[in-house]
Image 1 (cartoon, rainbow, N blue to C red):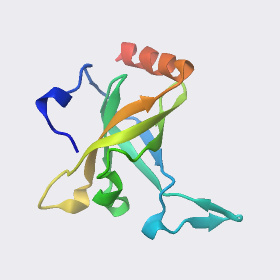
Image 2 (spheres, one colour):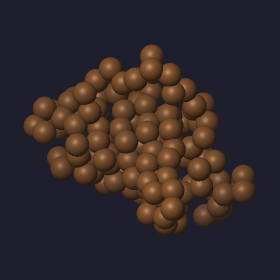
Image 3 (tube, rainbow, N blue to C red):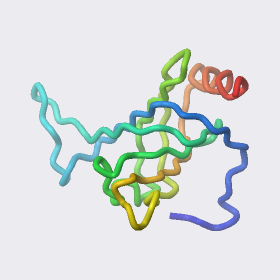
Image 4 (tube, one colour):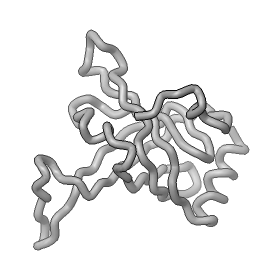
Length: 133
């Protein structure tokens, strides 16, 4: 993961608590879950801590998280943001993964993600939401 000062975010993030659903094609132990004859990847549910048009920071419960899933910037996730007026789907990659409290890992993890792809329609919903914060 890059942590250089040059990698600092360019957009102001706004505090927001939204439901987030992360989907990945990677399966537990690299073996897909089979449902109705189709393999499914892992799914994570969390809550945003802050968000901008370029990325977000979210909290995931540790029960559902293994740092290895978020240790590779090349890995991509489908992210569904549950905005008050619509659900927005974007492609994102992890920038960092940290425990919320080193002494109490059961508290969960803080995951920083950079948005990679988003349709203009999805972006318009997100920008409208951010302008109201």
